[in-house]
Length: 211
Image (tube, rainbow, N blue to C red):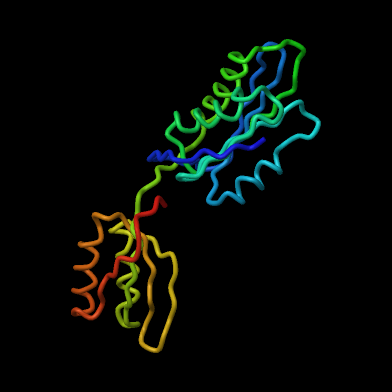
């Protein structure tokens, strides 16, 4: 049964660059780990459904997305699979990650401690060998630029690590929704004011997000 974790908050700085796999034979049981980056709980559940093998003995899983967590032991003794997998995700400084460990039973029981080590250990090894991307905390801001200045502004955004999340146009120019590191807000605001002669301002919108 899937179990939610609440009331805990960790600042994890990495997600995966792409899906990855790791396989290990432990006392004749085969453990296949598959992990992937996610942006939503729905993506996590879709990945779990896609890679789970109905013919295997167990398909245990865990995912972490900011302050949201879920995990499943899928028939293994309670606390021996999903929770150790979640601990491995956290222990590898990962966030926005889902992991599925598929086990084919080989006839030798591992005991509760052995199961926890197997599920947690194989998950950690999979994440250790995976390509990772550092998550940067960015704040969302909005600005409006006239058409005459828009190309120059967009060309300079990379200097401030600013990402364009959305843009919409009107008769005079474009409204840009940006995500950028907090320390870059003031420098970018100065640049916008200089380029536009004070017409364009940078308006912070919400709390920082990891993107």
